[in-house]
Length: 142
Image (cartoon, rainbow, N blue to C red; front, side):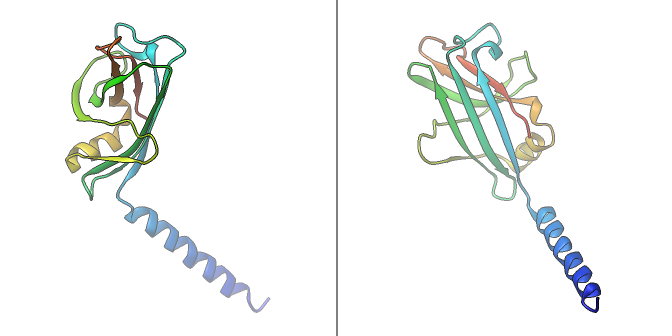
């Protein structure tokens, strides 16, 4: 019983350290599941899909991500756009397919902060030769 106050104090210190490290972390994880039926006007069939996982870091002005797709022909372009579900929007950054390693793109810190605050107002889309207006699309979530 003599150690009980020390255990409580140590637990409190550990919790404070974890809280402060979480608060000092400047970025956020963003992700999207990509499907053809999410493309405005229609995209690829139900056999095609994709996955986007990213870490947005305003302090580094970077968006580091993995983008993978399946069931599509040759991908010609991929982007992050500003736009709500069901609406096309302005292109913010071009993306690359990340086969084995993550890729990183530069974005203004204010844009990254806006994406982190309201991720559902942004989407990822993928284009192919067969679907030049968009094969796959998915709204971001945080």
